[in-house]
Structures are given as structure tokens and as C-alpha cells.
Amino acid sequence: MSLLDRTPDQVYLNQCREVLALVPETPPPTISYLLFTLAGQSFGLEAACAGQVLGELPLRSVPNRSREILLGLVNWEGSLLPCVSLLSLLTPESGSHILPYQSLVLDLEGERYVTRVGRVKGIVRLPSQLIEPAPQASRYLTGIASWEGEKIGLLDSPTLRHGLRRGLAR
Amino acid sequence: VSEAKVSELFLKFRIGEEAFALRAREVRTILPSVPLRPLDNSPDFVAGLLDYQGTVVPVLDLCQMCAGRPAVARYSTRIMLVDYPLDEKVALLGMLAEQVTDLIECDPEQFLPLQVSLPEACLSGEVARLGSELVARVRPDQLLSPERRQQLFA
Image (cartoon, rainbow over all chains, first blue to last red; front, side, top):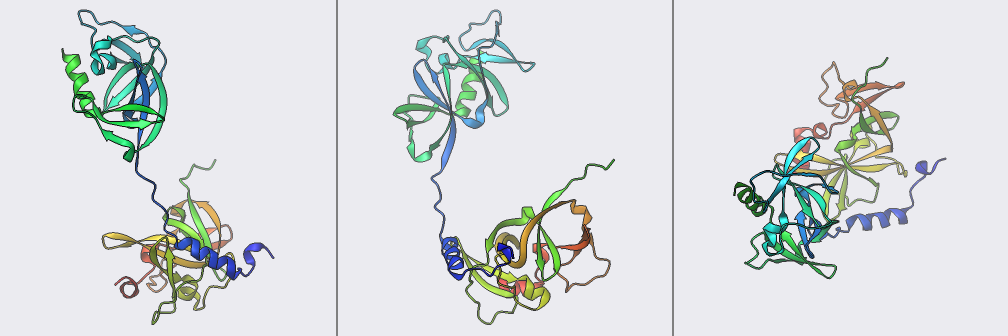
């Protein structure tokens, strides 16, 4: 007779009943962010806005442009994407070039950009209770999170999209 | 050469000797047949109430509904929790059945509606011939007649 055909043990069934009656704890809400460094600072971008992380990509320059926000064009999987400098958008005083860099494909509500960041640390789930509101002066940040002893500036993707659009139109 | 068919997983169980199947996607979870709180003045087919993670879930004994006897006490007798559509929301419903041990993979189109109209045979609206036996597909939303539904969820 196989185990499944046996008469169940009442003690076991009563234990099961007690376990089933327990209400599972709901984990605190989290938001996924892709963390990266930029000129020594840590930033987080909503993971949904991060398309792909790549190494260094050859850049085609665009003539007669200031190269402040728009660094040039990049061939990404056969399509030409604007390569933008998050650095000059977020910290204008530190110039627009970083070395060495990693390329990050941004997908801001369907608008794709390639940007250069220092180092991509990975995607983490930040508990929303760790996120504090950002100071008013920082227009591209939605909040600041303390994560593993570091302060991480969390980017606000709609404002970032507007900032990049405005920068490209200049 | 056989054509590639869309197949789905079905949870197979038995009531006595007869085989039944429930679409695996419709099954929330499968639980051992734990002791239930009896419901007074309830019809035979209501096995009782289950306290599942803080929710009170009515459990139906499919053996009572189909064979007129309670399900036998075996490890293979289990409670299947399904989502039962109720007007606008979804309620959990437990179904107690025997030999809840197998998952089978088959094309849902193999289950054909019965030619005869038997509203009382609410567990066997569609039947498929799988291997050497006939397997009836149970649809949770057709399990209860309007009167029974009223009794349980009013």
C-alpha cells in the first residue's frame, strides 16, 4: 500500500490546520531600482526604465552641436539612438565626460536613449520606507535612499525625460 | 506526423472510480484534507468551513455531490482551492475529492460537451477520452446550481 492510500494521521492533519490558519506576513512594499555610479555619486533609476547595460560603444558625433547633453549617436541593435550625458544633466559642474564608462540604454516611456554611467552595480529592491523625500533643489530626484551605508539619489523618470528632451532641443 | 497541439495542464482526481479533471490554472492551491469546522443546517455536500490564512473558505465534498457518500480518509484525499466567480468579486472555494495525485497534459479541445442536456450532472459538463477512460472536466463556475449558490454565498 502506497503512502497516499494510507489513512492520514490526525496529529499531522491538526498541525496542518493550524499552519493553514496562520495569516502570512505581507512583506513591506519595495521598488526595484538599477543602481549606478556617476562621478563618485550613486544614483538609482527605476528598473523598468533600464533597457540594457552594455560596455563602451562607439560614438558618432553630430556636427554643429554643443556636445553638452547630446554626446552623439550610438548604433544600438541596428537603430541609431541619441547618446546623452546624464552627468551634465545631473551635475553640470563636473563636465560631460567620464572614463571608464558603461553604456546604459534608457527606456523612458518608449523613448530610448543611451547614456554613459560610471559603473552599474545591479538591480536592488529598495523598501519604500527607506526612501526619504529629495531636497527641493535637486530637480531630477524623486527621493534619497540609504542603502548599505550609501546615499542614493533616486531619479524621477518623467522629469528626466523632460530634461533630456529639453537638452536635445537646445 | 502529428500536428503540434496547444496542450494545457489539468489536475486529475477521482470520485470513487470515476476520473475528473480541473484546469491547473484554475487551482489556487492543494491542501491536505484537514479537519473542517462543520456548518450547521447545511446540505450534505458542504464539508465545512476552512480557515485558510485568515479567510473563511467553504469546502464542498465532491464525493457527496456525485456519489452520495463522504470522501474517504486517505492522504490522497485533498482539498483543491479554486477561485469561484461571484457577481463582481472572486471568492475562494474548496473542493474535497479523492486521489488528487496526478497532473495530466492534454488539449482542452479534447473535452467535448455532452450531447444530452443534464443540468444535474454539474460535474460532468464536458468529457474527454484520455487513454482508456473517460475524464470529465469540472468547471468551478458551473459547480453550483443557482439555488445552491444562493445557499452558500448569500
